[in-house]
Image (cartoon, rainbow, N blue to C red; front, side):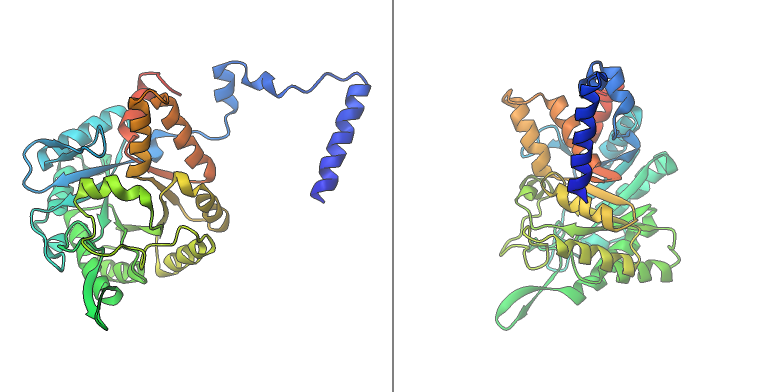
Length: 351
């Protein structure tokens, strides 16, 4: 059928030329910027951007992240200033990652009422209320001495991340963030069944309005290196391929999303973004649920380093990248470029 339609269009065009009809020129709609903007199929609205932020316990001021030029670890006081800066340029959503001063095998500081993220949530909400949407990462990798995203046990002579034991801890973390006033919890661990456990635990304690944005499709990607340096979260042994997704698989992504929806998720996520645009598109096509895409640390740093070498125009590269993610189907884009992009838009440097 598709071939017949294409052939029919070709015949009609040939007939038009023979009859003396004006030639069809696609470039007419590309000649000036205002016209291109008028008919653009996708727009990256600032309201769809989420800025990830690192908060370090015990830090005074700010600390540069060498692996992510332009990004910093923040004290809680500096976090409040940074959120104010984000609001000034039109970014109203943040994703918080905590870096604790103490780690143990069980990540107990992750669910402490006085933990770094819990304090950060309270301070942001105290200063900005509902003007800022606060999302918190729910995981153990930054809080465990071994650097894995769950509780490690020994079975049959080898160390493994135990799925069901981890679920109990994740629900504690989510509850502690809800008590602090978070708007959305975002489990990134990739344990099976965690959305259902977190949803039940939140509902039982009366936090029915706290939403869950699950890292539903999180691949075991090589692009996480700069983040692991920034958050001090590299695994001390092995890797995370036994719980994060195999980059070779795409049908599996649909199963992961479907299971999270059944368990009560509110927003699903694909991570990373740029190398997995096909996955974003497939998820969007198959499910009518808000879809986030996380443009991860490696994507950010690649553009930064190329720009520093003069190999790309940074503004145009980011503009193109964000629009490709939007075009693939993402409703929400989590990006370390959120503040810079918003400033460029505000200053009229890109549109």
